[in-house]
Length: 250
Ligand SMILES: [Zn+2]
Image (cartoon, rainbow, N blue to C red; front, top):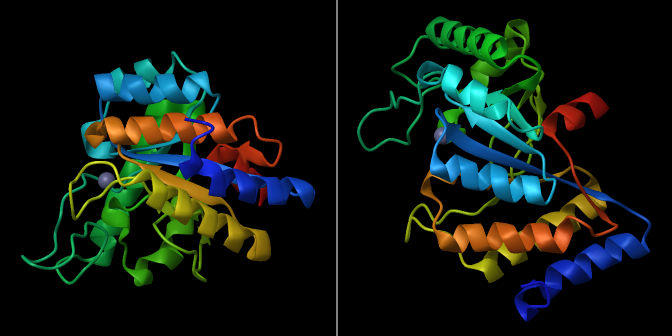
C-alpha cells in the first residue's frame, strides 16, 4: 500500500517535482468499452472514489444507448473514438491493424472514422472528446493529415509522442502483460516505468498517460490502480486531468 517500499521511487520522484515547484499531469485512458459491464462498474467506482477523470476509448460499431445511459450516472468519464469496429484487417502473422495497412483503402478507413466520430458525438453529447485512439495503437502515417478534416483534435497511441500532422496525447505506461501472463504486470516494473516517464516529462514536458483495459483486468491490475491513485491523487505535485482539459490547454 501507500508506505510500501515498492512505491518509494514514485514518491521520491513526485517529491522532487514538489520541491522544484512543478506539477505533473497524469491522465488515464481505458480501451474497448462497448456496453456496461461489472468490470466497467469497477473502473468507474475506483476512479470515482479518487476523483480520477477517465477517458474511455469506445468502439463505435458495437456501442449504443446502454453505455451512454450508464455514463450519465457519473461525472468523471469522457468518451474517445476507438477506431470503427476493432476488426483486424492485417494478413495472418502481421501486426493487427484496423486503420490502414495494405488491405485497406484510405478513403474507406477515413469514411469509417467519420461515421464513428459522428455516432459517438451524437450518442455521448458533452462527454464526447474529439480524440482518436486507434485499435492496437496502430494507424498508417498517411492517414494522419486527414484526421483534422473529420474533426479530430488529437491522436492517442502508445509510447513517446512523435512529430505528426495532428496533436498527439499518448499513453506511456501499459498495465497489462499482453505477451506473457495476459494479466497485470509486476507493480515494481510499472512504478519504474512511471518514474522514467516522470523524469522525461520533468526535462522535456508532456503528460504521463496510463493505459488500462478494464475488460481483462485481474486483481493485480486493480490493486495497482488503487495504490497508484492513493499515492498520487492528493500529492501536491500531481494533477489528474481529463483529456478534454488537456486538449483545451493546448
Ligand atoms: Zn482496443
